[in-house]
Length: 209
Image (cartoon, rainbow, N blue to C red; front, side, top):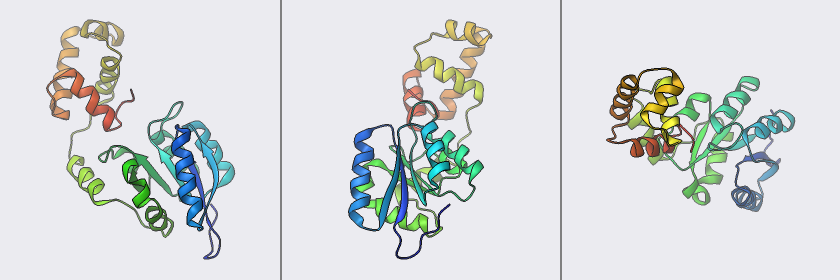
């Protein structure tokens, strides 16, 4: 990865599946006079490919993307470049998966204009950037019991509109087993119904809608 001198601009890779978001970020970065946008990616697969080729100082990484989501892209990039510095762009403050995958910072999309440049400077110096509200949410959910892979599979099928009987047939278990899994899912997410479970799981980045 490139090491920037005091006079050289920080080289930034922007990864987001919304072109307007990428363009807006680029405008803010270029206007700072201290940063250079060296590449744009619209999905996780392209992000991994461009990172390997460009070796940016900082990567801004969306989480909800096609082909390869942000967490998977972070994992892939960090496996090749353990010192990669990646700042996550997200709409939900409590998604800890990206930090576990090796992200260096968290930036809520509604605070990009306020915090973007500070986040990049902090992360580029080797520190972690976590706004107070993000740190609080992560602390709150750090002790949550994680969903099992089977429970996540069931949530994905619920999100597709599948009934319990259909889910049972698709994953090869009895309908009562599906109901037992649902009871466990509701307890772990502290919700009372399927719709709320799917909505909350999507917000936390557990599943994608």
